[in-house]
Amino acid sequence: MELVNILAIAVALAMDAFAVSIAAGVTLKSVSLRQTFRLAWHFGLFQAMMPVIGWSAGLTVRSHIEAYDHWVAFGLLVFVAQGMLRSAFKGDDDKENAKDPTRGMTMVMLSVATSIDALAVGLSLSMINVSIWTPALVIGLVAGGLTTVGMHLGKAIGSMAQLSRWAELTGGLVLLAIGVNILWEHGALNVF
View: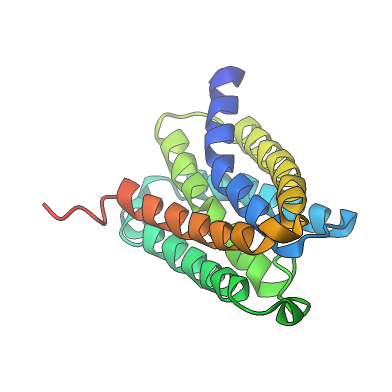
């Protein structure tokens, strides 16, 4: 597989992580180097691990995973989004106690939710006999890089006091939209 194709796949897979990292930056408003590293490291690590797991599983597990992977991603994104939406409607004094999305289970849930599509890519690559190591490395590095950019972009938006509440509300809605899009892409919303 050519590097250009791998980069295109990596950027496409990292778009969810990029959008979520913008929302995290909006929530935090003040992003430290440590927070940036934590989120970028975890998003990059999960984005790199999932294709390897999918590739290793190959065809044997695919039929079991496809039935519900999109619902898992949707549920995790909805859980995090509802927290952001609730925070957007709270008073400013309550925001001091807002949960840091770069720590604990919130970070793990976001990491899993944004990387489930990479699992399917790994499965696909195993079917066409492509070695997984270079794609996994590139996917992880691109996700980590875009997460870093997204956090600081979100911080810039979130630090503007007049935009803060709207930005946080938008971030929550973006997470919900990503979740709905995942369901749509997997055909879970097809009525006909």
